[in-house]
Amino acid sequence: MSKTIPIVSAAEAATAAVTTAIDGDGMGCHAGGEKMLAAARASGKSEVLAQYAKDYPVSPAAGPHDQPQSMCPAFGALRVGLRMRRTATILSGSACCVYGLTFTSHFYGAKRSVGYVPFNSESLVTGKLFEDIRESVYNQADPAHYDAIVIINLCVPTASGVPLQLLPKDINGVRIIGIDVPGFGVPTHAEAKDVLAGAMLKYAREEIMAGPVQAPRTGRSDKPTITLLGEMFPADPVIIGRMLEPMGIAAGPVVPTREWRELYAALDCAAVAAIHPFYTASIREFEHAGRPIVGSAPVGHDGTEAWLQAIGTVANVPQAKIDMVKNTMLPAIKGGLARMPIKGRITLSGYEGSELLVARLLVESGADLRYVGTACPRTPWSQSDCEWLESHGVHVQYRASLEQDLAAMHEWQPDLAIGTTPVVQAAKELSIPSLYFTNLISARPLMGPAGAGSLAQVINGAIANKSRFAEMKAFFGEAGTGASAGVWESAQGVPQDRPEFKAETRRLLEKQTKKRKAEAMI
Ligand code: SF4
Image 1 (cartoon, protein in one colour):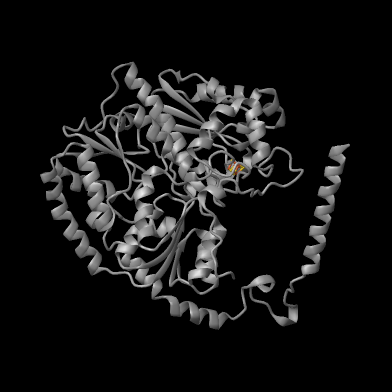
Image 2 (cartoon, helix red, strand yellow):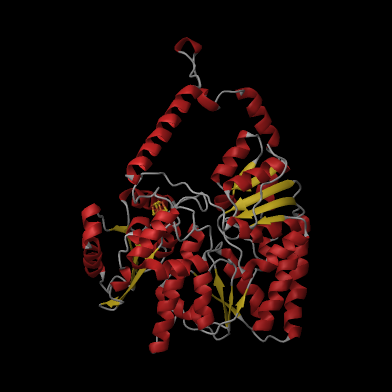
């Protein structure tokens, strides 16, 4: 393994030609980004794709599953819809995509049905699919049950130009939100959350401009509020609220919101805290509403100090009050970090968008953190986190690929690898303790005094397991690796690797591809 991490700068990565396209696969999931983008543009989706290219920059050549190598991005938008009260969510896409998405939603505890409008080649090309979608939306639009219906175009309907924008904006008082979330235009499920949150904020902002709207169910806050951008651990908004209270301000709603009328309250704020920095479309809506945006988050001592100052300044809080809060919170955070130190070398990667915040907390807890990779892009709202980490010797990789995350792990030989499922699997094969970022790290409080020390127990526990990995490796030997994975009796024969079969298959596939190309030229 190379001792140099093949790290590609964000600018270079944007032009690198990577693709998982399969020649001759038609206009399906493996057609590749260029083909699908071209088809989508030709069918009237240029404007929305141009906006996505600006909001969520990636290599223009990358296909649905190239960027990053993770689950279907549309899951992010689906999840936001499924978590909202009185909101129905309908998918329009290939059955295999919809199967995967509904499976994942229910795996993650969705308690709602996912609507689906099926199609075949005929209904797709004749425009009947759009009529079917329109019919299903009319059938569902019952104001007694719903405030809003969300329809999500997946890859194939987007590439085919199914015109959700032609749906009525409102049916019987139920808002209709049609969005395109193709994997070849929206790279991560994190950013797909922004596509829907941004579309809803836009709709709600236009409603506010048109006249009076519903107040929040709990009434309007009597203090100026700070809207919190990004799905976070449920205790975090409460902790943030406690830190803001002595400054005379309150924590506002968390966006993505859990019900429609919270959108109005979110827009009715003094400022927006972009806790997760990738909500580009949502931030655009807040900026249209004249709301100032503050990046980073109150994590660790330095992060909390800077964040309280920035929020206090933007909300016109007198400096004496800001200092008073700092004087209470910062020693408590320092004490918490010192009581629960983290000892060991760590590499960290994920696709949630909170990776840089977790990284800051790890460094302040004493961890020897060498690398943080995030599948999300660089934005102004994580700039201070990036600079802080780099000044503490951490390599920050935006739009990190799996290969980069793995190379970092091989390079630094950490005591613990925190990462996505394939990184964790690769680490375990090497007897390196590892933790899955989404379930085990991002599902913990990170903010203010509650965040200080909250990661230490799980991380130190995992690092302490190193010797168990070595014991297991010694016990199992080569069982469970390569072609002979599993337990075999030699009497029945142990499976042997047959590289010559693989080479022959590859040769036949290459021959077939050449033949197809030659035929296409005739
Ligand atoms: S909709 Fe999702 S699962 Fe289907 S091809 Fe696109 S990215 Fe893949």
